[in-house]
Image 1 (cartoon, rainbow, N blue to C red):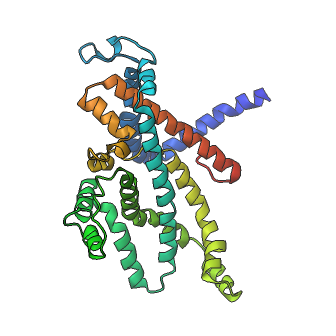
Image 2 (image 1 turned 180 degrees about the vertical axis):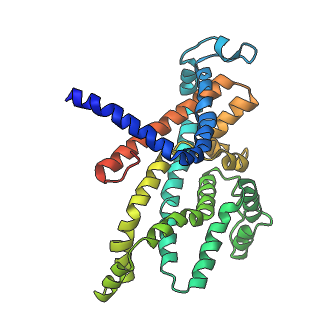
Length: 313
């Protein structure tokens, strides 16, 4: 058996190189992407070692003294650890629960619009907010939710309620952060589901209509099963970034009054690393964050593989 395998190995190796030679143009197209990933994703991993050192720019990475897990222990024993972990998980899980079904629901609604012109107009209008930059988005939120001139508080005053300083109320921070994100990203996220629905055979719907199935039953028994593989893949990928709440938006929305709810791991790493120049400590925190993301990604992928036939690997 081993002799047969050894005889087949050169042939398979030769055929692989032959196929690569025959399709070298395709590999040339792939080369820029591979170089990008290698230089910007894998090469920087060299710097992770400063998480285990007292990094000094004068001494460099190699000559900086080794301290082991000292920075991790400092972070875990810090009074901010549980606050940062709680805020990061609450905002991220809230975003996942509120934001993940929204594109699916929107895609299903758009798919059942009969008028083609209204359908295109609706799709364009819903994914347009995706192109608004984070800075502009937070500026819009400041204007809309202003306690003195924002239209939301103007409406509240009109119906006899008190004005609310949304950016100054810590409990309201996560709601503003999450639902503004849902509004901005639902339309763009729905595109992939609309594409998946386009692959559903019209004959299935025609047969269901003949059998007297309502739209709700057609959605439940035809559309949702077609969307399930795509939804599982996107859920796995989203689960792998649970600890990676967007830094820029959270940082721009922070005020002294909502800091207890808005301070998350990514904003803390920025302040510690760049503002306080504690590079080793901030790298250790970032490494901890990424390790948790990796564990969650593997766990959710294994669960998806166990309960369905769809997984990343």
